[in-house]
Amino acid sequence: MASSRRDVSLVTNLYPETEPYAHGILGVGDGNLVYWETCGNPNGKPAVVLHGGPGSGCSPWHRRLFDPTAYRIVLLDQRGCGRSAPHASTPDAVLASNTTTHLVADVELLRQRMSIDRWLVFGGSWGSTLALAYAEHYPDRVTEMILYGVTTGRHKEFDWLFRGGVAAFFPEQWERLCAAVPAAERDGDLAEAYHRLLRDPNPAVRKRAALEWCMWESATIEWPPSTELAWRFTDPDFAMAFARLVTHYVRHNAWLEDGSLLRGAAALTDIPGIMVNGRFDLQAPIDNAWQLNRVWPRAELVIVDDAGHAADNVAITRELIGATNQFAQIR
Image 1 (cartoon, rainbow, N blue to C red):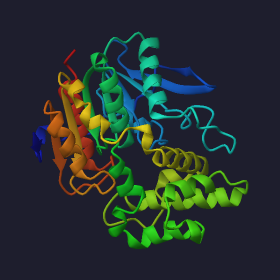
Image 2 (cartoon, one colour; image 1 turned 120 degrees about the vertical axis):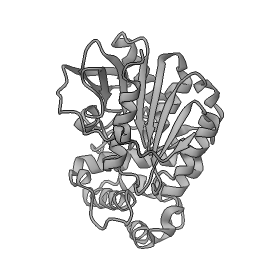
Image 3 (cartoon, rainbow, N blue to C red; image 1 turned 30 degrees about the vertical axis):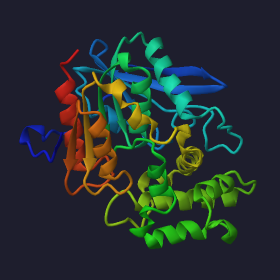
C-alpha cells in the first residue's frame, strides 16, 4: 500500500538529544572491532539502527528519531567506519572480511551479546539493504522494520548510481568523476578504477580519489544537484573510509545474487513495516521501494513529495518519527 501522507499528527520534532547509557567494542573476528552504543530506556522496546553508506557510521541524529522513554535504541558502526577498527581510512586496512554476510553476522552477534530476544530493525539507504538481508536471514528475531531511501541490492541499483545510469541527470558531475581516473579506465567500471586509486601508494592520489568520489555522492543527494562537498565529507578520514568502503561494496555488487532480496521477501510475511521514500530520490529511486512493496505487502510505503535522498529532510524526518512512534507500544 502506498500513500502520500499529510497527517498533521505526524508533524513531530526530533526527540531531545540523548547520550548513551552504555557503549563498548564487540570483537567480531578477523581482527575487526565493532563499536556499539545503546541509549533511551534500558527496559524499553529494543530497536537496532543500521546506517547507510556503507561507511557512514551511526550519528546522534539517529538516536533522536526514537522516543527515549519507549525505546532501547542500539546503534553500531559497521566494520571499517565510525569508531570501529581497523578504520578503512588507513592505507593498510584490509577489507577482505568486510562483506554483507559479515555485517549480517555482526548484527546478530550483537543481539545475542545484549540478550535481546527480538528487535525492531531500522535502516536507511545502504542500511535498508542490510536490514533486508538480516531480516530474511533471521526473521524470527525481527518485530518490525522501518526503511527509508530504500535499496534492495539489485545489480541495476548499483549500476544506476555508480555505473552511469543517473549520470543522465548529472552530466557535469559525472564527467568530473570520470576525469579523475586515467583515460584508459574511463569506459570501464569506475568503482573498480576508484578502488585502485584509493589504494595507491601516493597519498595525494588517494586523497584526490576520495574527494572526487565524495563530490559525486554530494551532488546526487538532492535536486537540484549540489556543487559543494557535503559537510560530512569535509573530514578527510571520514571521506577516505567512506569512498573505500562504497567502492569495495559496489565492485562486488555487495556479494548479493542479483534480485535475491526481492525473491527472499517471503521471509518477511509476518513482519510489519513502514518504508519512507522521497519521490525525487535519485540515489534510491522510488521504484526500489515499489517493487519491494509488491512482494512485502505487510509494509506500508510512504511517498514524501518534494524530497530526495537526504534523510534529514524535514518531511522525511517527520515520517520516520511517526513510524517509530507507531511501533513504540507494540511489544
